[in-house]
Length: 298
Image (cartoon, rainbow, N blue to C red; front, side):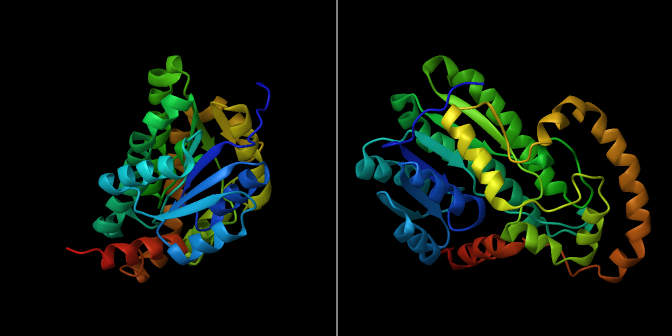
């Protein structure tokens, strides 16, 4: 395990910073002396987060899937802070429900934000990270390691960002830029609480085997992420047991397929009775994304 580096005076960029993992991560990084650039879709919330930080900070209202907007943000961050040492691609949305019942627009949006938005973020800030020999942390999920019925878009997006980040590590490592992937299980955020509003999704999750069947507190998970940033780690685990999942991930698709079929047969009558009532983005972050798209010209 590599030694921790001081974050004093470093400039950290955090996307999806208005709430949840992004908000608490910004607070924890600032508590360690980092200056913070916040990016998200909720300007009022971002302003409140920025006002509470003990170090210099600023926020930008931007959609991570908008290439031109993110390039402009990257330029303005450099103008404001002079550098970027850490970039955390945290922005994400989720959708739950059977694939055939899902709204194609929302399903596609999960891929756009979680995968393409992460790549757009990296593309905008990599020149600065190359200059500072910095660190890019991609927030992934347990969903990158194991598939889950009723979560096709989210699992696809997180498996995608994991693979993309691993590839990018090989491309830029010799230039001094480190790339890490962070894995979190079900963590107490607006996204998870929003998914739990669906009765079937909540019960399916409760039927998962331990330790994947519980919701974990946000604080300890973010503490682990901060430690990973200080170490510029290639892999960061928000919950202790996720590291062990890597050793058995090759067996998980088959096992989940068998268990998933049993569970789907069990829930089929309830899913049929509520068909057409699910499929949109979940949680406050999902609502913010839908509001932002609705307000966008054209």
